[in-house]
Image 1 (spheres, one colour):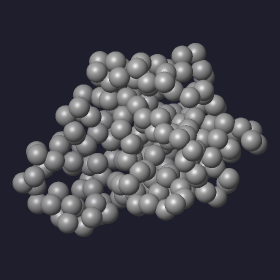
Image 2: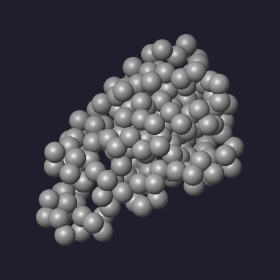
Image 3: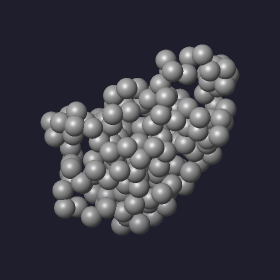
Image 4: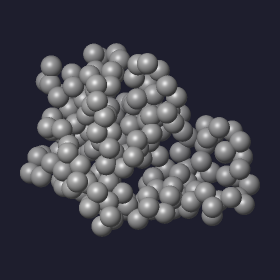
Length: 186
């Protein structure tokens, strides 16, 4: 099955390098301007996170294409770090502990990264079950969601952070039910 994984366009929080997970920000004007310049692949069955930035991106790059909303594909809840950038958090001892732990610990008053990744994987599998055999699925989701899916399924194996992709970009892949193989980048 062909699967396209596309990260939403930029928001104001993305431009300021803030942790934007559970905050339901719309696309910024700069984000919209960037999206219209990118040549996107043909759309398959379209799945989106319920967050405004993903729905707006999907509607902008695939106008008129109906989409399926999957709550499990939402970005991570960054808890106390939500809406802040690394400069604002640089003197926060809980942020330093999180960094020192390799970013694997729970976000204070937020989501545990391992739980987030499992949620995304479950949402991905739930979504592709709705796609006809030998079909094509397109996901417009978050950077963290893409990284979770790719870390779990992609070959060759890479770490979570190695699968980072810029806003408005992503991967064109083939999925055999067990492994994802990247065939191109967006």
